[in-house]
Amino acid sequence: MNTKAKGTKGERELVKAFNEAGWACFRAAGSGSSPYPSPDLIAANAIRRLAIECKVTKDKKKYFEHGELEQLRIFAQKFGAEGWIGVKFSGEEWYFLMLEDLEQTGNLFAVSVELAKRRGLKIDEVMGKEEKSDSGNIP
Amino acid sequence: MNTKAKGTKGERELVKAFNEAGWACFRAAGSGSSPYPSPDLIAANAIRRLAIECKVTKDKKKYFEHGELEQLRIFAQKFGAEGWIGVKFSGEEWYFLMLEDLEQTGNLFAVSVELAKRRGLKIDEVMGKEEKSDSGNIP
Image (cartoon, one colour):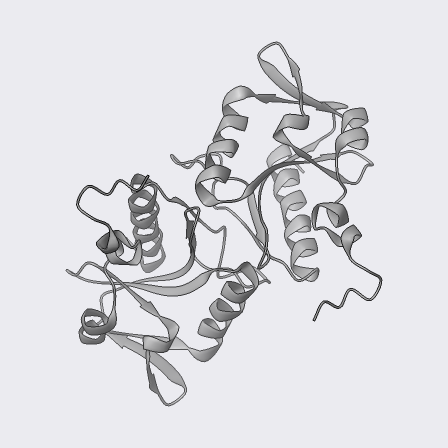
């Protein structure tokens, strides 16, 4: 499976996870090739909206150009959404980081496995499940 | 150009129009083939979110199955969005209707050119531009 196919597969896993947790979530068509800012995924419930840029990588550290993050920031602001970076390193779970959690190295921004584990949220946490009581029933 | 290509072209026109008006808007990937409810387009600004099912047709009347509209209703409710049907008849502008504005005929729901013009909103109206003053500057 090539890099693009792995990315698509990873995004579909997230779409499934969000939908199964009761959120609405879908992938954007050709998010990298659209002339307008667009995230890879949008996930929302009645309260929150998450615009997510997703990366699946074999490396131990993933780099982002300033422009890519700026597009996410602009989109999120216009849409009224939270901007998140979702990163899946080989053999690890998905971790979600806010833009300001990335490490700046020169003109690039980066997230390592170590940084993801230290500052990132797991999918249940990004959905806010950890804030609910065991029953999870809010009237 | 086949029906699908015309539909995609029509959706891209709407993405352009919303983005040029300052909204965030993008097309969903394979909205018809996803196992989870997904509209064709999502458009939002800081205040409103529109989930739009788009149809481009050569006919004078466009029919919808109950299930298709139900999927849009479910998605919109989960996402916290307004559900809209966007219809482009040949030689006409885009018209936007709410689900309850469609005409029920047996098990199907329909929108004719006449109904679209009578109950539908044009794109500027669905974006709420008609509510602004000429200056359009809200502090």
